[in-house]
Length: 349
Ligand code: DAH
Image (cartoon, rainbow, N blue to C red; front, side):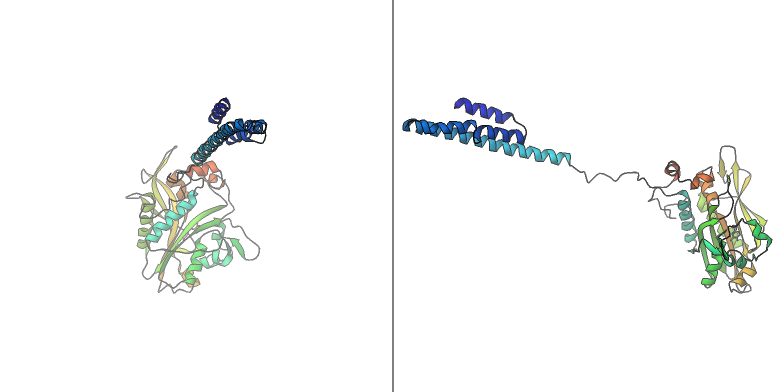
């Protein structure tokens, strides 16, 4: 019986899983287990033998049962600890530094431009991509058969509709919906039937309008140079206002920015080259009349610029076509982090 006990205790001591422990319980204490067999012998013993043997078997049984119980709780505790260790989550870890999503450079630059113009008091206006001919052309002093219509390769839609060729169409809507004085910008998509290295059939423009009494070209120049300095983060930007023609402005100008062009790079604000970046002018009296404003009372300036061009210049992106190819590698390289929202306070340059 002593042998049986030490055998059992050694076996219990060495098992390491609940299943193996249960097998030992069956082996010793089960219906036909080793201890149970001993108890069965009791019936064939003499009364005085029965007493001592019975007491010994009972002790054996109790000791083994206790050892099994103790080991069981040890194994359960170890199992719980292993689970807690493997399922551990450190809630104090910082969030992943890079999320997969990126903000497209065009969206980012539209936000930057908006932040700068908002700081100068410009409100934001919006118009439809599918525009009627009147808003896109006629009200902008470009009636049917006007030669200036040939300046833009328009996508015509059934009826009197077009895909807007310029955000200038929003000028008309906004001037009709607001009482002067006002100043607003309008950014968004525009469309022209053109497709090569430097032209896409869909691109983006931002328009600006300022109407008040006594507005003149000096205000326009100040506004444009203020914007460009803030946008490129430069103390000074060399600017050239070159006489031009747009049907909806008189006088009209195109603005060139001073830069240094070389085969490998283009530096804004240096050198002796010029690069055209926007069109502008004093709003034509006919346009003011078309939106119900008296040109003798109200004057204003307007400007419009291509957003892609500004993106390419500011962030050194060489090829326009890549903007629309939805290539994730390109977006990861040139895109912006989702939480880098441009504000004047944090700096947009
Ligand atoms: N809409 C013109 C274009 O797409 C750009 C432009 C020129 C807008 C002069 C203006 C402006 O508001 O005054 O080429």
